[in-house]
Length: 193
Image (cartoon, rainbow, N blue to C red):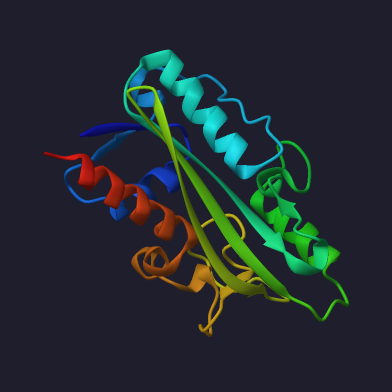
Protein backbone atom coordinates (compact mmCIF):
# COMPACT_ATOMS: atom_id res chain seq x y z
CA UNK A 1 0.00 0.00 0.00
CA UNK A 2 1.26 3.46 -0.90
CA UNK A 3 0.76 6.20 1.69
CA UNK A 4 1.38 9.91 1.37
CA UNK A 5 3.19 11.27 4.42
CA UNK A 6 2.18 14.93 4.72
CA UNK A 7 5.69 16.24 5.27
CA UNK A 8 8.70 17.23 3.23
CA UNK A 9 11.04 16.58 6.18
CA UNK A 10 13.36 13.85 4.84
CA UNK A 11 14.49 12.91 8.39
CA UNK A 12 10.90 12.07 9.35
CA UNK A 13 10.21 10.24 6.08
CA UNK A 14 13.32 8.05 6.45
CA UNK A 15 12.57 7.37 10.11
CA UNK A 16 8.97 6.35 9.48
CA UNK A 17 9.77 4.25 6.37
CA UNK A 18 12.21 2.22 8.49
CA UNK A 19 9.48 1.67 11.07
CA UNK A 20 6.80 0.47 8.64
CA UNK A 21 7.06 -3.01 7.18
CA UNK A 22 7.65 -3.61 3.48
CA UNK A 23 3.91 -3.82 2.74
CA UNK A 24 3.81 -0.03 2.88
CA UNK A 25 5.71 2.55 0.88
CA UNK A 26 5.78 6.21 1.76
CA UNK A 27 5.79 9.09 -0.67
CA UNK A 28 6.05 12.76 0.21
CA UNK A 29 3.87 15.49 -1.27
CA UNK A 30 6.98 16.70 -3.15
CA UNK A 31 7.28 13.24 -4.76
CA UNK A 32 3.83 13.95 -6.24
CA UNK A 33 4.76 17.46 -7.39
CA UNK A 34 3.21 19.25 -4.42
CA UNK A 35 5.55 21.77 -2.81
CA UNK A 36 2.78 23.63 -0.96
CA UNK A 37 3.45 24.91 2.52
CA UNK A 38 1.21 22.45 4.41
CA UNK A 39 -0.76 24.36 7.05
CA UNK A 40 -0.42 23.71 10.77
CA UNK A 41 -2.38 26.45 12.49
CA UNK A 42 -4.06 24.50 15.27
CA UNK A 43 -3.29 24.97 18.99
CA UNK A 44 -2.80 21.22 19.66
CA UNK A 45 -0.69 18.38 18.26
CA UNK A 46 -3.89 16.48 17.44
CA UNK A 47 -5.30 19.49 15.59
CA UNK A 48 -2.14 20.06 13.57
CA UNK A 49 -1.79 16.38 12.59
CA UNK A 50 -5.42 16.32 11.49
CA UNK A 51 -5.17 19.63 9.60
CA UNK A 52 -2.09 18.48 7.65
CA UNK A 53 -3.61 15.09 6.79
CA UNK A 54 -6.90 16.71 5.69
CA UNK A 55 -5.00 19.15 3.47
CA UNK A 56 -3.26 16.29 1.64
CA UNK A 57 -6.43 14.17 1.52
CA UNK A 58 -8.39 17.05 -0.05
CA UNK A 59 -5.64 17.55 -2.64
CA UNK A 60 -5.07 13.92 -3.71
CA UNK A 61 -7.89 11.73 -2.25
CA UNK A 62 -5.30 9.03 -1.57
CA UNK A 63 -4.45 7.28 1.72
CA UNK A 64 -2.35 9.71 3.72
CA UNK A 65 -1.13 10.52 7.17
CA UNK A 66 0.52 13.37 9.03
CA UNK A 67 2.18 13.71 12.37
CA UNK A 68 2.81 16.48 14.80
CA UNK A 69 5.31 16.10 17.55
CA UNK A 70 6.07 18.21 20.56
CA UNK A 71 8.58 18.27 23.36
CA UNK A 72 6.70 18.97 26.59
CA UNK A 73 8.89 20.18 29.47
CA UNK A 74 7.41 19.97 32.97
CA UNK A 75 9.21 23.01 34.42
CA UNK A 76 8.01 25.11 31.45
CA UNK A 77 4.34 24.14 31.89
CA UNK A 78 4.45 21.89 28.83
CA UNK A 79 6.34 24.28 26.54
CA UNK A 80 7.52 24.27 23.85
CA UNK A 81 4.77 21.71 23.03
CA UNK A 82 2.93 22.44 19.81
CA UNK A 83 5.46 25.22 19.10
CA UNK A 84 8.51 22.92 19.34
CA UNK A 85 9.64 23.43 15.72
CA UNK A 86 9.46 27.22 16.04
CA UNK A 87 10.25 27.69 19.73
CA UNK A 88 12.97 30.28 19.08
CA UNK A 89 10.80 31.96 16.41
CA UNK A 90 9.67 31.38 12.84
CA UNK A 91 12.41 30.10 10.50
CA UNK A 92 14.83 29.45 13.37
CA UNK A 93 17.14 26.44 13.34
CA UNK A 94 17.10 23.39 15.60
CA UNK A 95 20.29 24.72 17.22
CA UNK A 96 18.52 28.00 18.04
CA UNK A 97 15.55 26.09 19.49
CA UNK A 98 17.92 23.99 21.61
CA UNK A 99 19.80 27.08 22.81
CA UNK A 100 16.54 28.73 23.87
CA UNK A 101 15.48 25.58 25.73
CA UNK A 102 18.77 25.45 27.64
CA UNK A 103 18.42 29.15 28.52
CA UNK A 104 14.81 28.70 29.69
CA UNK A 105 15.83 25.83 31.98
CA UNK A 106 18.87 27.62 33.41
CA UNK A 107 18.92 27.10 37.19
CA UNK A 108 15.91 24.78 37.22
CA UNK A 109 16.36 21.40 38.91
CA UNK A 110 13.25 19.81 37.43
CA UNK A 111 14.43 18.55 34.02
CA UNK A 112 11.50 16.16 33.40
CA UNK A 113 10.15 16.16 29.88
CA UNK A 114 8.36 13.99 27.40
CA UNK A 115 8.15 13.75 23.65
CA UNK A 116 4.62 13.25 22.33
CA UNK A 117 3.75 12.32 18.75
CA UNK A 118 0.25 12.27 17.25
CA UNK A 119 -0.42 10.71 13.84
CA UNK A 120 -3.60 11.36 11.88
CA UNK A 121 -4.36 8.76 9.18
CA UNK A 122 -7.02 9.25 6.51
CA UNK A 123 -8.24 6.39 4.34
CA UNK A 124 -11.44 6.72 2.29
CA UNK A 125 -12.11 10.03 4.03
CA UNK A 126 -12.16 8.42 7.50
CA UNK A 127 -9.67 9.63 10.09
CA UNK A 128 -7.92 7.73 12.89
CA UNK A 129 -5.50 9.14 15.49
CA UNK A 130 -2.52 7.34 17.05
CA UNK A 131 -0.35 8.64 19.90
CA UNK A 132 3.12 7.81 21.17
CA UNK A 133 4.77 9.20 24.32
CA UNK A 134 8.24 8.73 25.80
CA UNK A 135 9.28 10.15 29.15
CA UNK A 136 12.75 11.50 29.81
CA UNK A 137 14.72 14.54 30.84
CA UNK A 138 16.48 17.52 29.33
CA UNK A 139 20.27 17.51 29.56
CA UNK A 140 22.30 20.59 30.47
CA UNK A 141 24.24 20.51 27.20
CA UNK A 142 24.25 18.98 23.71
CA UNK A 143 25.21 15.28 23.62
CA UNK A 144 25.58 13.44 20.31
CA UNK A 145 25.27 14.17 16.62
CA UNK A 146 22.65 11.72 15.34
CA UNK A 147 18.96 12.46 14.84
CA UNK A 148 17.51 15.95 14.59
CA UNK A 149 15.62 18.61 16.51
CA UNK A 150 15.88 18.26 20.28
CA UNK A 151 17.55 14.82 20.11
CA UNK A 152 20.90 16.10 21.50
CA UNK A 153 19.17 17.39 24.66
CA UNK A 154 16.66 14.62 25.35
CA UNK A 155 17.65 11.56 27.39
CA UNK A 156 14.89 8.93 27.53
CA UNK A 157 14.02 7.51 30.93
CA UNK A 158 16.05 4.41 31.75
CA UNK A 159 18.87 5.25 29.30
CA UNK A 160 22.25 6.84 29.91
CA UNK A 161 22.51 8.73 26.63
CA UNK A 162 20.58 11.23 24.54
CA UNK A 163 18.58 10.31 21.44
CA UNK A 164 21.40 11.92 19.44
CA UNK A 165 23.86 9.28 20.68
CA UNK A 166 21.64 6.41 19.52
CA UNK A 167 21.50 4.85 16.08
CA UNK A 168 18.27 5.43 14.17
CA UNK A 169 17.24 1.82 14.86
CA UNK A 170 17.89 2.18 18.61
CA UNK A 171 15.95 5.43 18.76
CA UNK A 172 13.07 4.10 16.64
CA UNK A 173 12.66 1.08 18.92
CA UNK A 174 11.72 3.29 21.89
CA UNK A 175 10.78 6.74 20.57
CA UNK A 176 7.47 8.57 20.68
CA UNK A 177 7.27 8.43 16.88
CA UNK A 178 8.22 4.74 16.93
CA UNK A 179 5.38 4.00 19.36
CA UNK A 180 2.83 5.98 17.31
CA UNK A 181 3.98 4.43 14.00
CA UNK A 182 3.75 0.92 15.53
CA UNK A 183 0.10 1.65 16.36
CA UNK A 184 -0.42 2.99 12.83
CA UNK A 185 1.25 -0.10 11.32
CA UNK A 186 -0.84 -2.49 13.44
CA UNK A 187 -4.00 -0.68 12.33
CA UNK A 188 -3.01 -0.77 8.64
CA UNK A 189 -2.06 -4.44 8.81
CA UNK A 190 -5.43 -5.25 10.37
CA UNK A 191 -7.13 -3.65 7.32
CA UNK A 192 -5.31 -5.90 4.86
CA UNK A 193 -7.26 -8.89 3.49
